[in-house]
Length: 207
Image 1: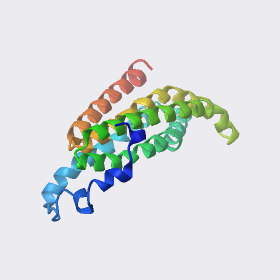
Image 2 (image 1 turned 90 degrees about the vertical axis):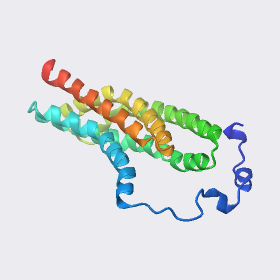
Image 3 (image 1 turned 30 degrees about the vertical axis):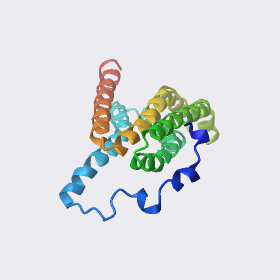
């Protein structure tokens, strides 16, 4: 059953309203249980944005104001034009996967996952084209030519990361939906540690 032929009206007609919820009675959890569930998600979102802070800290250690301004401008541009679009598209999965997994429909979960990957790929290509002209855009906004050039160079090397970030975000939503948020957090933590080590090598060792 492909998503193109999947009739949402028919899917809802298979269940009455009460069947959309597994528990008829509200589930009560203690504060400890709530924290246990929430902490991996909080840590996951924190690590998600830590890479940019790490980049800024390592560049700031060089004491070059132009480089600091360039990384700051590059990070904000990447957030506003790149990540906001990709993460926004990915939020669609929150509802779709929750409903499909709640109905134990693993096949449609897989279809949602693959379609999200296709949409993310198309968005990545469009964003890559747009970010390739970032230097001209910065100069149009009357930014310092040195900062504009270095910011564009920074974005050039960060563009490939958008692909992996988008696809990991999609996979992460699937893991969280099935209660595997700790596994997603471990993957994110390992990536952050590797990112920190590479920053140390490129900035402090090899420069």
